[in-house]
Image (cartoon, rainbow, N blue to C red; front, top):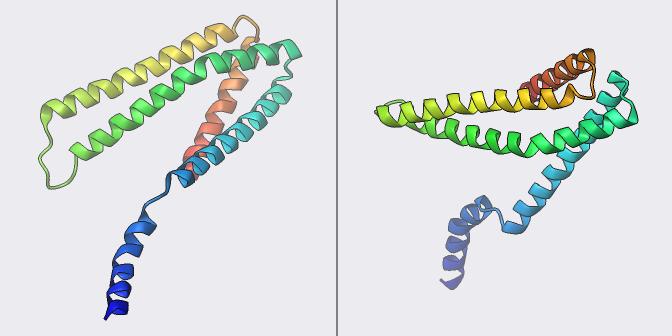
Length: 154
């Protein structure tokens, strides 16, 4: 009888426990993701330096510019992702969406896109001080192709 109770408890709890991720695993995944992102960024930086034929000074300045704008861009992209999730929650089939919430979410998404454009414009103005127009255009093309490829993989 005692053994049956333990088997029943195990059958009931194992799926629930398996679905939970221990904090150590989340930290490890996060660390792996950061490491992978850093490797991809390093490789992309190498390609940019080669294809744009950057001088060492240009490469250093470009990295500093990227670092300066990256935190703002990532924070904004996370905010946009959260807003899209909230909008998806509002737009579930069979459930009436709240007009005011949807309007506010749409306005926030639009404002986020405008802010992303402002960040890109500021970054481009910064790069204009040390990159030629052709180098800046090539960099934009490389970034767009990279982003398109990432979207395809998702």
